[in-house]
Image 1 (tube, rainbow, N blue to C red):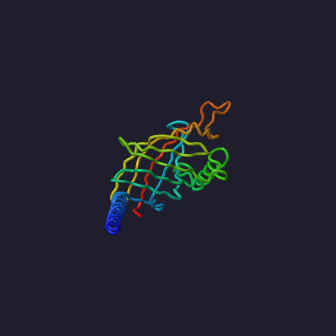
Image 2: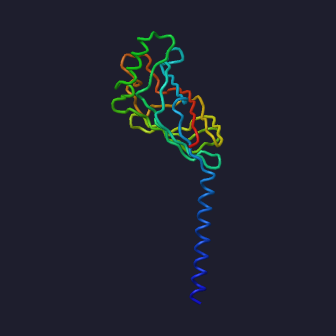
Image 3: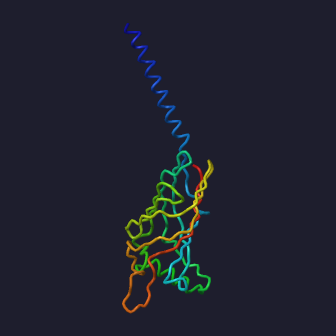
Length: 199
């Protein structure tokens, strides 16, 4: 009788292990991990006082990961390297472009000596918008941004043009100054082209 019980328990245990392995395999089969292609991913920015007075530039990503399950975004985390921020205004001479770039990196704006990176975390993608949290100067800015997501087993692209309001971060350079008739707006426009490859 004891032998029969031992055999029965062995069979049950084997069945449970088999089910567990199969279940884990199924989850992995439908869950895909992607890593950022830093060379082809781009993030352009635009900021200024109004539609006539503004500057443009770009900044690079230093790392990033994305998880998708059954073709839907589950989560993601990206790091923007603020030390790479630059000005690309075609109407500005090179010396002024370099001056503006230095100004943006200084304490008047992003203070890259203290805040060298900006952490971006993403969640669900629904109705054409991506749940996003951007940490700037130690402050979390939460916003659903409109983007287009295209994915397959080889990779994912996330593209879109959108505005982000950084008022909560209190960036020094966008705070009203006494005597100024118009100040730089805390709302920046972005042009995102995020390219990720399957791991």
